[in-house]
Length: 61
Image (cartoon, rainbow, N blue to C red):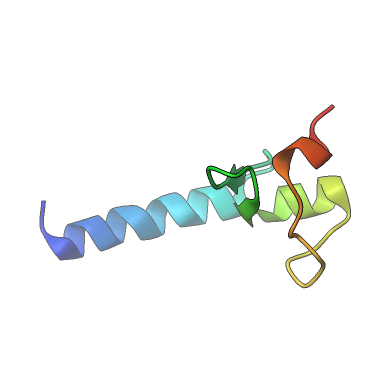
C-alpha cells in the first residue's frame, strides 16, 4: 500500500471516529488518556482544552 493510500485511509478513519455518536477514547500503556472524540467530550463534560491528563480508570464505571 502506498504512503498516499495509507494517508487517505487514516484520514477516512479519523473522520468516521470524529463524526460518530459513539464514544472513542484511547489510552497509552500507563492508562493515560491520549485521544478522544466529540462524543467522549459530550459524555464526560470535558473538552480537549480541559485537563484530560487523567487515567482511563478515572472514567470507568
